[in-house]
Image 1: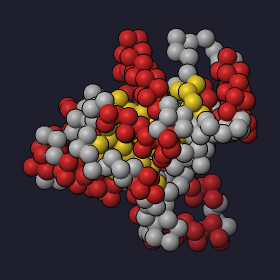
Image 2: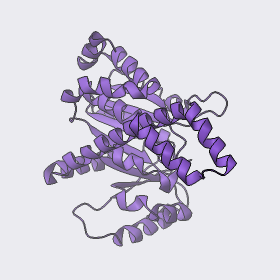
Image 3: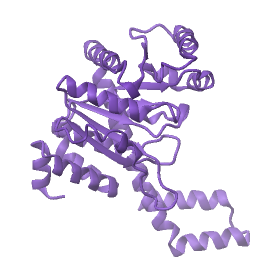
Length: 313
């Protein structure tokens, strides 16, 4: 990547930032080289992950949060993780359409990225894109996930604050959240709170939160009607309070380390995957298959040999 492009990124050039994220997204194995240049300028941004079941209104909530931030003259960047099209393998960029009323504002930067189809819900490039936004001077980075519910644990590693968004009458969804993500949620939002069932959902969440182990931070439960920009100032207040809590208790640095672990794990996985793909096309792999078919070897032996070959490359 041209050094002058990264230099412009560090000076806050939006076009250079967009180009860098494109390179990170398309060439994830080269992301580490870009990150090596940007690393000394990272560690300042607070990252906020928004997750929850599909249909909870996460995109609308993010759009409303952006308007709230602009009213306060805050600068906010958004990474919208979009589902992958089965036909084109590209991202279905629906999220940006819901935020277009603020995307022209210089205090807002919105970028859609293709999400992985796995349970984690993030892409290999996501941690590196977050760090690029951090290096470019964006103090707040919102990450909106596709929304695969309780399996979406990677967002917790990527974000310093995790917001779980639910709808009224979401009894089954609350039960699903209890299966894992609840223990890692920092803020709960009941969106579309003008609908029937809001109070029942709040009571269910309150009972569930009361069963959590004692902790210095108890996840607040906030009601919003994001389509009408109601309640989002309260969400921002909770996010800011959680950030202050992390800084005061010294937990911010530990949470930022989780992003580094996520980036490193993804990078190593991608490198191993590339080596595996090369091995699968080799004559050596074909001989392994022939040996298994002939009965002179078995899948366990072939797998061990394949792993040894991959690790020795």
